Length: 122
Image (cartoon, rainbow, N blue to C red; front, top):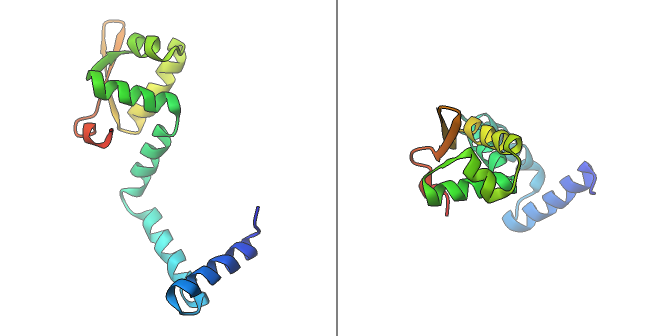
């Protein structure tokens, strides 16, 4: 793993090759830009969604929902081979990331992609 100083040196060399300018002048600009992006209103939501989809089982559940519309937790459980508790946990993460809506019907939980999310899933 590179040290921070080595990383800065390599980055500086790349920036100098790309821009023809000394990199020391533009590194603070990029740091400021990165801080601005992280504080932007949509960034936390995008990060939450990317983290939610970073798990193979959650991504699979989203793909299943895209293809079937609405599924009961037990159907997701049968498709994935996960325990009921694990499916419940994964679906809660997707609901918290505002990617999936949940509704209870008696003792059953049903899930579907949030309106407008279908186009984001291949």
